[in-house]
Image (cartoon, rainbow, N blue to C red; front, side, top):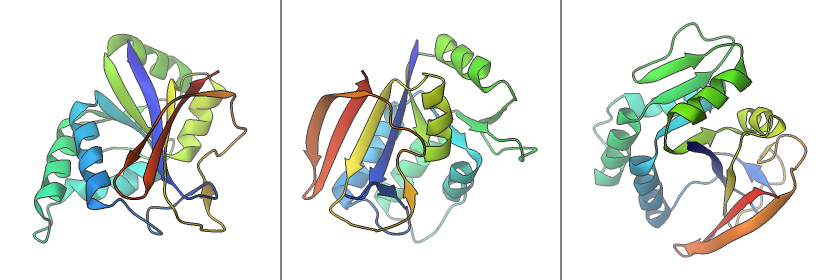
Length: 176
């Protein structure tokens, strides 16, 4: 049975914003290794549209960016959207029955499926479907933006923590 893991970079004050801060080279290598080992990714529409950047080749990319691209492109993706009519390569549009579709996906797959996007994570949290929350805590204060937890915070239990690179702490929580 697959496990759903919601993990994102987060500021000290609880916000996620891919334009305000990004991963160091060390953290990016960590994300490459994670992408290589994942059973797939589950996206909401907005996050999927951001990640579609990796579908196009960019001549200025360095070796780590090409490695992430290769890992991202080969893994299956599921996109939860009511507005998209079609999705790109290796992607499947999830229909109206979110709970049924995700329960079936978890039952038919093995490994870790990344959940990307706070709004999708909010919906999956309310359905009790997220198995782990990973916060990559950066020493940045944004003061505003999209919160990591888009809805009520579920009761959580810390299961591990570690430092990645110079200044990022990864916190892993499971529902309590």
